[in-house]
Length: 164
Image (cartoon, rainbow, N blue to C red):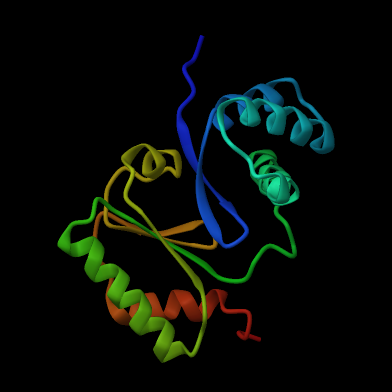
């Protein structure tokens, strides 16, 4: 039997580590459960290994549903705006990439949710094998090299909601 591992999930405005969510997601996917049934199943499984505040149950279920839909290849139209993930072990290049992203956002006049991911297991789960890496709205833009400021700004402008 697989031992449950922790995975970071975006719940509201926070990233929260949940134990056992990967196993539950994969079981629901293998059983080809409809989304509503899968959310209930995964939530019950996750609740066995994690404390979930009673006031946050709905937000946890929404986040679990979003993760399950991602696995199914269904993307939410109303998914939160611009999300930028900087993946790396905390080295100078990775930290420099975060500074560069903030500068590029400022130059582009765009606001985004920035998340730094340092956990190697989480980085690999996202499909990245070399760092630093930059992921914008779930798409890996670069991995293994540090991009230029102009490249980062261009990628941000490409996906900016104001880019019409």
